Image (tube, rainbow, N blue to C red; front, side, top):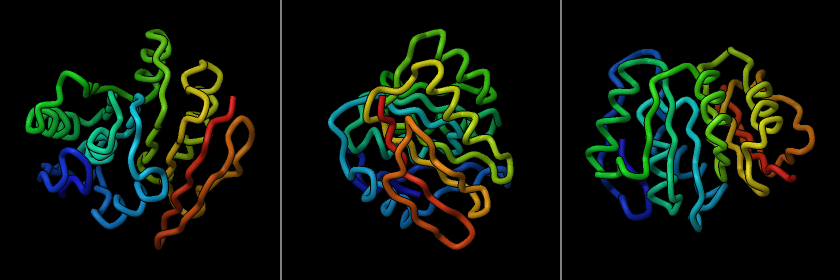
Length: 183
């Protein structure tokens, strides 16, 4: 696994040694960032189900200013922390070992507002719509915030205001939805 583009281009990342995570392939990562960027002019990124941290690191590499990465599994948390140290980005990349609900509560209390949100939870949980509602209700998204949702095809949901579906792409059993938040 590697960083595809930007200031950390071609840097190798460690992957999680666990069956509980599914790393995004380099090809899918490149397709995703071509759909949403491919580069950013600053902003704060939230990677709520971090895995190895690869997607959030890619966003930093492509111009995001700051990254908040969350994973409740210890192996994933340790891998993310290791990748942050490897790239020497601990000053702008923060990793939290906790459940996504607790992380959202904590970030809301801190008054954080995001410009890019990456949602790639374990399949079958049906939680993405609830997460979007929480982010909206707690005013955690800047106007124009992009939200990337990856889930099983049958878990794709109808997008309602204040979110607008920008793009949708299916890859085998999964669907990638790109949403934009409009205040």
